[in-house]
Image 1 (cartoon, helix red, strand yellow):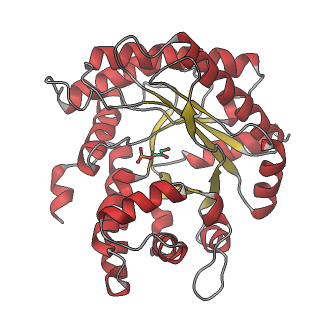
Image 2 (cartoon, rainbow, N blue to C red):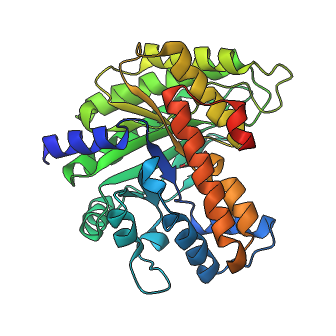
Length: 340
Ligand code: 13P
C-alpha cells in the first residue's frame, strides 16, 4: 500500500468544487430504471446509456470521479474505445462498485447485510489493473419499528471496514457508504439518531481494521425526515441537522464527505448540499461534496428515453445537473439555475 498515493487520490476526488458521479447501478437496478421508461433492458441499452454519460462534453469541469459497475468497466464506446480510457482521457478518475448487493440478514426480519467479501482481494487486483483508482461498497440501514438493530449495524460496519482495508491494501481509495434509507415515516430527529449511531460504529470498525482515514471518502445519507413523515423540514434545517450529526461522528482526518442522493429530487439534493456549504462555510474539517446517481442522472435518462436522436439533449441535462452540484459545493446554487 502506498499511503501517499491513497491520500492524494482521496484528496483529488473531493478537490475544489467537484464531486463524484455514481453510474454503478447493478444490471437489475439499471434495468428497473430503463423499464420504467419503456426502454429495452438489454446489455446494449445499458452500454449505450453509459456511453452517453461518459462522453458528455466538459463533464470534467464538475466531476472528479465516476463509479462504474462490473459490466460497465469492461465495456467500450461503439467505436471500440474502452470506457475507462474515455474517462481517464477526460481527466476523470475511474472507480468501481465492489459489493455484490444487500441480502436479508439472518435472524433480523426487515434488515439487510451487504455481501461481497469473498474473493474481494482478487477482484480488487483485477479492477486496479483495469485502471480503477477507487472503489465503493454500500450498506443499507432501514429505519422502522424496533430497527435498525445493533446486530445489523455492527455486521454491516464490520463488512465495510474489512472492505476498506482490502481496498487500501490494493492501492484503491475506499468510498465507505453507509446509507440510512429515506423510506418510512420516521422523523428527522430519528434519522439523525440512527445516522449518528451508524457512523460512530463504522468509524470504530474502520479503526479496528486499521483503515487509514486520510485515504478514504465517506459517502453518507443526508439527515432527512422519512419520505412519508408528515413533517418535512425546510432545506436549512436539513442542512443544519446533517452537518451537526456529521461533526459529532466523523473524524477530522477524513478528507471528504460525498453525499448520496438516496431518492431526493435533483433540485432538493442540490439545494440541501448548497445550504450546508453556505451555512457552515469553512468550519467543517472535511469537504462537503456529492456522489449522486439519481440526482444527476434522472433528468438525462428521461430525456434520452433510449433514442439516439436525444443523446445531445440528455448530455446537456447531465451537464446542467453537474453544474448545479458544482455550484452547490461553492454555496452558489440557486433555484434560478434551474430555469437556465
Ligand atoms: P443515489 O445518489 O441515487 O442515492 O445513488 C448513490 C449511490 O451510489 C447508491 O449506492
